[in-house]
Image (cartoon, rainbow, N blue to C red; front, side, top):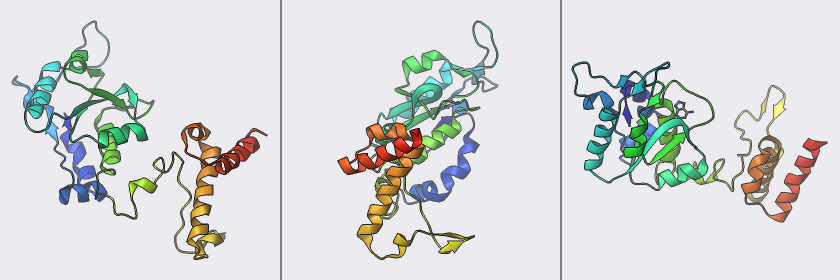
Amino acid sequence: MLTTFPEMFDAPLGSSIMGRARESGLVECLVHNIRDWTRDRHRTTDDYPFGGGVGMVMKPEPVCDAVRDLRSEGPRGVVILTTPQGEVLDHRVVQELAAEERLILLCGHYEGVDERVSELVVDREISIGDYVLTGGELPALIIMDAVIRFVPGVLGAEESAQTDSFAWDGLLDCPHYTRPREYEGLSAPEVLFSGNHGEIAKWRRSQAILRTAARRPDLLAGARLSDEERALAETVLRQERD
Ligand code: ADE
């Protein structure tokens, strides 16, 4: 991570699954302060935009020096700039990034980063969605979190990334229930207590299809479905239309 706000990473990188993955040595996350690559007395990382306008622009020299320094040690890595102008993060992009040995996440801030940084040292620009945040630190953490789940050993076999939403044939996840069996008049579905693992798996799969058709019909086009499953999805789509 290359950032001007390193403290923003302390809690997320030290907690929960990301914290555990780091402690167990499955992943290494280093947070670097871009200010450490400034050369002036005030450790300046931003400046006024040429041509005028609001906000500040991140200067190219400290960022490019930082990236080049980091790249001089270890694998070359992929340099990612977090920006609303980038390609939108999705399951496919996460899997591509997870296949890389090293990621260097450059967190944009203020009005943006001098365009020459992108030309000189950035490999990929990534957005986490069509809205604008105050900085690229949270997007970088989201990218890290999503990528780390695909590092072998980070999730237990049970919580394996392969069975979650979007990894499961491109469908949304099915509903989940735990104790108590009845809560405020609502019962967990009977099939989950049947002990019949085949039936439970079938129910979960059909729930995933029904939910996807109702909530995110756009995903169905890319989902891997049998003819029977596609017919089920079509029924929901027809009902939604009527
Ligand atoms: N920086 C500000 N907004 C962002 C977004 N939506 N995605 C990535 N980086 C950003």
